[in-house]
Image (cartoon, rainbow, N blue to C red; front, side, top):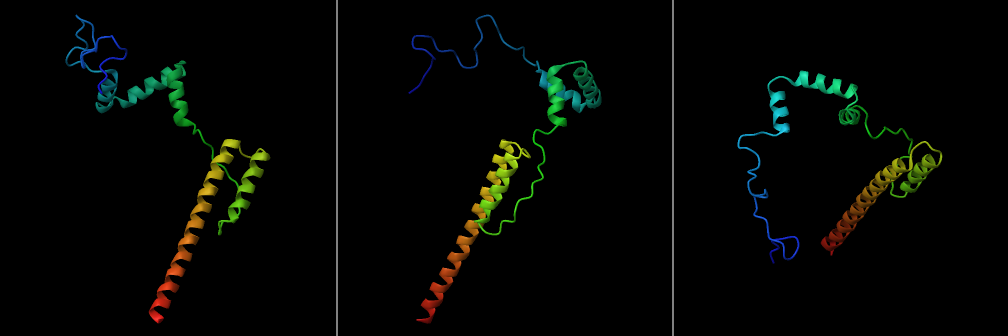
Length: 150
């Protein structure tokens, strides 16, 4: 089923020509702003453009201020939290307890605690899966060994 128009009864627009009659659109050979900036970088004017951008940001250009702030200051901070060693899947309970304590004491934010809990959970699942594989290998070895002996 083909839908030529958004609402029933309205004429379909011709693809590639959304302009009103008499409006030819962009002139052939014209380039957009992004292309001009990229060409300037290639011509060795990168330093001048960087200086100009910093000057505009310092003069109060909000978009440039945001641009530089996002690149200078990371959104996430590094967290130093001592978690117990996880050798078995059950050790994840103790590690999650340490994460919950850190959140409740205000050492880390709840969103940071959720991210850490996700890492602990994934690591615990990996340990559990590795343990299951070892058990399966052991059972297969015992099964194959007893079939050879019989």
